[in-house]
Amino acid sequence: MITIAIAWFLLGLLLLALGGDSIVKAVSGLAQRFGASPFTAGLLLLGVATSLPELAVNARALAVGQPELALGNAVGSSIVNLGLTLAVAAIAAPLLLRARLQTVLWWSLLAAGVLLILFGLDGGLARWEGGVLVAGFIVVQVLLLRRG
Image (tube, rainbow, N blue to C red; front, side, top):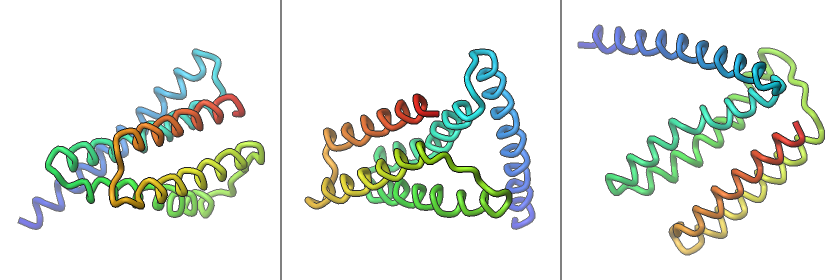
């Protein structure tokens, strides 16, 4: 039984690596075709592709009536994406940070955290509060694309 589970796990890792490589090549090709910079392509890929699994898990959690799981997943993935992923990337190769983008990212992260705390003071998030957070995400993506 454990052998089958390990085999499925290894197959999943292989497919994940192949799929990740394919999507990076596809996004890079599209960026070149449309005249976008590699930074812009990477930003869009990172912003969308890393959020899709969390979106799927959160939608499923809400569908089965477990909003706590959705909130925990959203907060936990944000912490891992910011802390662990950035740290591992910096260990692998020094990162070049553009100061004009850093300012937008830090302020937006601070604003999103404060809004989440304020919105959650009553013990839940209303739909309009979720809409405000989604609108903020879109505004930050547009600002980053313009400054990138």
